Image (cartoon, rainbow, N blue to C red; front, side, top):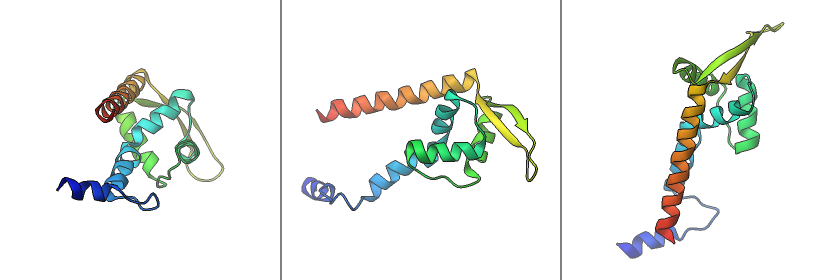
Length: 126
């Protein structure tokens, strides 16, 4: 059985095993709150800007409404707040979100958890 597992791990770099794809999905789109808070820690932004920064800075795409859904949940939990609203000629007003002290604490805990996990994984492999 060990030989079989090792053989499956010796894959070509152009093909990704399902386990790796799952890991990427779980640590990106399914934990989008980390990315949003990280961006908002630098400066307030509106949802569309957040989508663009995620694409440029972190290299993955999110759906059009996904940022709004996560921002709504973060706002409900007191981790972000609306800094200001700018009316527009067309469409809905643009809402600028900023991180709150509670959001900074949550971001710090999330980053610490991932850092500790990474260190544990490295210590196990070396």
